[in-house]
Length: 269
Image 1: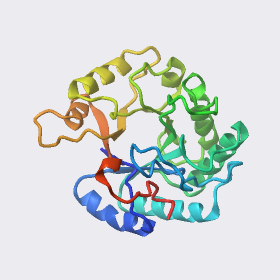
Image 2: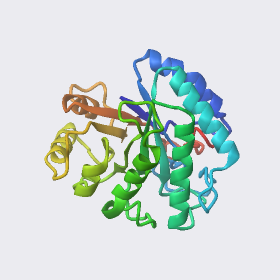
Image 3: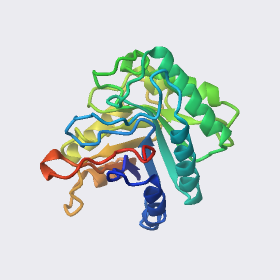
Image 4: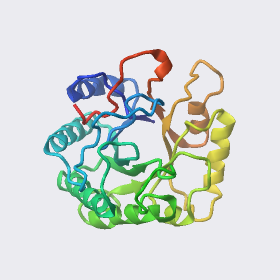
């Protein structure tokens, strides 16, 4: 099970996230997911006037973000949990300038994780790589395998895990088939449940992935789902478990709740 992009309130320090990890773990939560470029501060509002990216436009990690990233990774490790670390988010501001910036950022974060000796980090290269607003061709579905392979290659021999490298994937939002090249490359399969409105849709999506050309038996993980319904006899979480798939909560705020904007990055403050 994972917890995807836990929002923190305005001005809230990332230390509060770290302080909450023992409570999460005590309730059986085994992983948390967060992104160097944050998330959508207004949930589904898509209003994004805030600085959320941990990178400069040319793809260099900001020093304060690096410090917070290392603190969070250390805390996740200390609590015996797994971090699903995302590199890129499509709506982050400021945007990365070009393909070279994406490559530079990919290499820098990969090196940080490897040099830190972390063995409990899964990589999500991009959040929802199949969203049409991506400008980088290496993020988009047709070439999404390239950055996955880049992280795998750069980390090879540098991580003390059975694979000897980082385990890498990239996530998809829509129910469209995941590209064969990506399935041939990725170490695990990330798919989102936001667009899967019923438990039956979750079952269907998992089965579709497993029958898609290129699938090699990798683990499945939903690291973002806003369908909760835990009080119902059937819900997306149970459907994922029945499919032997991991499941992660997307804790968001909708505009209709009339709350102050929330900062969707544990690294941003």
